[in-house]
Length: 362
Image 1 (spheres, rainbow, N blue to C red):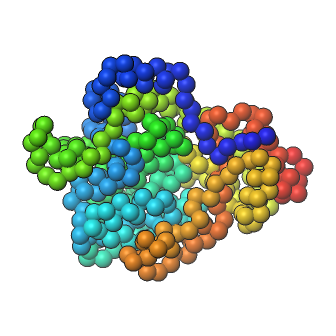
Image 2 (image 1 turned 30 degrees about the vertical axis):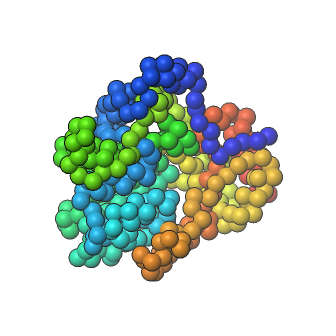
Image 3 (image 1 turned 30 degrees about the horizontal axis):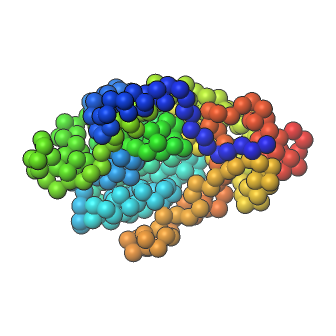
């Protein structure tokens, strides 16, 4: 058996939507992108959604829209994908890393408090693996210290905190539509906000600073999404709630059959969260041995993430120090397949393989 860690859910509807755009000849950013933006804003519950070329550009523009720049510090997590840090660096600002919580791997509010300096301008939590950070505590910190909040929701399409979708809680949010995400456009990103001023700035920044053709009011970028990508997104957005339900059902099955195994710890859903399980991530005391065993059994796994961001050569000049919980997580986390393509037979096989490794009968 060969079970991939991720597999995009694409079908005839997406193919037909792309073909319709191709037949129209209007391939670049246009009416289909606008349709996708309108639908995504409605889904998240924000006034605006601004489509971009990928999740990294969405984060970059979100930061610039808030006026983040040289001399500023942005507090974020070291336990994330590289774009979380590099998007801050792109603006000329400095990433400052707080530690994470051992239960959810999301940013630790108390560690944020300890990292605040007079240069701190914003907090950028990552809603890791599809579960919201503690937005109540982050909101309190932001209000107390007059800080902005940028939500890195690139792994959390449809995740909720106290019934409100992430990406619509802070000042501005950013999403990715990379093929392994809960929904995809092939490549693509989205910025979400209810601020008219931030939305206007984001739209200018993604399109050469143009207010109209050849009218450039600022130095901008070419970070546009195409109608082809948006066509896929329009269809995928309709399917997203179903995709998320299946991920949650698959996660519940895995937890129900793996919980309590010696040497393993299954993920939790913290109070007031709707966890959409972009990844189903366990802790394993002998992570590398388990991963090698599952690979031989044909079960693909992922280590997200093998090193804190501050250990990478590109980030080291910006930050010194270590974060204990993040360091420990990099040695123990292992993500198992949880995507909607999985059959019951495949879920049973994953469980049986892990139980075999743990020395128990399936």
